[in-house]
Length: 134
Image (cartoon, rainbow, N blue to C red; front, side):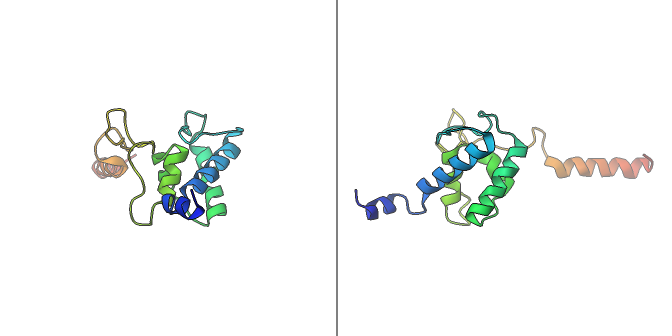
């Protein structure tokens, strides 16, 4: 396959991004090798290490990657595909990206209860108004 054909199959440099993400994860996790389907959290990663990965992505790509994206795409391949996606497309999803459940549905990220954090604050604010005392 020619270099041009290879570029056509990988237009946004996803293979290069996979190598970069793998390298950054190795640095953050203190590992020698991370595969494209490895899950950051299964390898011992946690939210504090994601901040280090985010800082390194900013330094290497000149791009501020939202922390939520690092949670949303916990595999090397998934994060690289998301980073390679054109801006405004919402990134990658589906098989191999770390967002699909075994049943084929996309996994959601959010609170188990309805309403999210803002609903919790709103309920707390109503209680404060009613009680007017802490």
